[in-house]
Amino acid sequence: MTSAVPGTLAALLCFLSLTAGALAQQPTLQPAGAIKPQSKTTEIKIGYLRAYAPRLTLSLLDAPPRDEGVAGANVAIGDNNTTGKFINQKFSLDVTEIKPESDAVQAFDDLIAKGDRYVVADLSAKQLLSIADIARDKGVLIFNVGTTDDNLREEDCRINVFHIAPTRSMLADALAQYLMVKKWPNWALLYGSHEQDHLYADALRRAAARFGGQIVAEKEFKDTGTARRTDTGATQIQQQISVFTQDLPEHDVLLVADESEVFGTYVPYRTWTSRLVAGTAGLVASSWHPASEQWGGIQMQSRFLKTTGRRMLSKDMSAWTAVRTVGEATTRTNGDDPKKISDYIRSDDFSVAAFKGQKLTFRKWNLQLRQPILLGDTKSVVSTSPQEGYLHQVSELDTLGIDQPETKCVLK
Image (tube, rainbow, N blue to C red; front, side, top):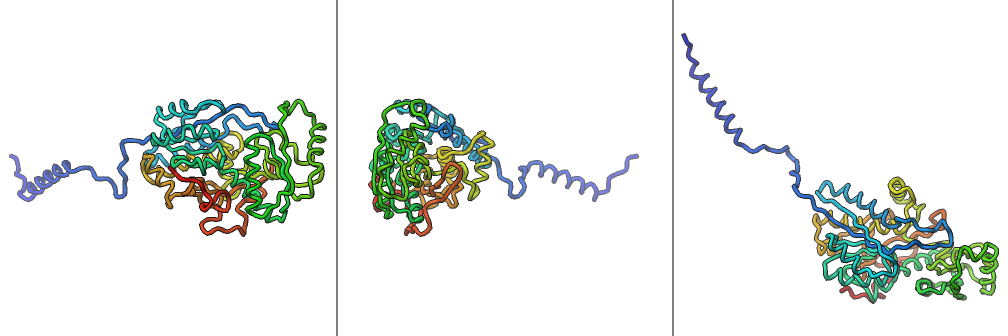
């Protein structure tokens, strides 16, 4: 005999069955605060176009490493990807090399064909100008890390070319400020016979006039084309530099403008009179120094050394800053539109941290990165400019280089 289920129990079982069926039709709910992952990753491709050839230097210690600049860019790609993975952005670097005197247009077009819309350029001024307008017409942004020519930020400026490398005028101003703070106002100037030497000599003359220095004498050192290492022994060099500086009038500092690496390294300790040397030899102004450790610099240095096996140079830091600029802008705008990226970089909202004690921004009038300049010798950082007491109504960093009232740039 089968016993009947009581009416109340049967009703309860029916209710539970219907409730379970209804719940099975509901969508699965995510925990509060969970972010639904995006299905598609945005790939941001950055090109690196460099003019490269082995460069002879007066000292073996000054020979640039094979991956100078590129190493800094690669480290920054890793930094960008550390952040990018949280917002589904992936960064990559395409490196292309050409010879220093080669046409850069074809190599640039090849990078664009790969999908690169941001190009870090380590090129001569002539090569950079040859691709600037092509890049503008194709919506490509260029980040100059190679040339310090002031004209690229002035008469020949372009709205799509951002300058990470400091100008010669910025480097010269940084040095001049320090010399004036030290009350060493009288300078003798030695400069080489090549174009870049003359340009840096011009920057030093401008800095002297701007900050009250006095250039009491100038001499040009002619490049005779000899093999600089093998044709001159230590004794001959010592005698040559001593005689070359013998007739200089009384001065506090001997300024050297020798970007072409013909004689500058030989000047310290070989002069006729015992004088400090500064410029491209002795006390040198640069955007970075391998011994910089302030403002978190030791962390950057250690990470770079671990990654590359060598110390970080100025061009490495410039390339790192260029790639980080793209990374910062794409993160903040949450996209990969070069027009939006350009607008954001030029806005008041943009800044990039580069281990220099303050956030760096671009000058709106010529797209030059504002930055402190380090003054150092072969072993350490001696000082950082702008020097204390050099004030400016907008930014003390604008006491270095061409200020807005002086600019000849019309961005187009």
